[in-house]
Image (tube, rainbow, N blue to C red; front, side, top):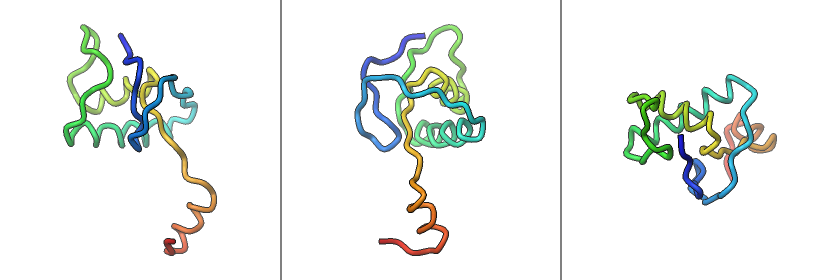
Length: 89
């Protein structure tokens, strides 16, 4: 399965190195779900379709996350606390 040399993360900024492997299955599901949402809205898959690439968008998203072509950022503690209080700045 080939990876694109240059990819964009979920926020849209360009990167060239693979993402760090996700060790938390909960984080994996969250990142893959966000990517599947992008694919449903018309984003192009970042892995070339081979014989083993599935057709369902959710499976494609999970394969992209597994191969490290999807980059993500986690909210900071401040952002999380601000969101829980309902205030935005």
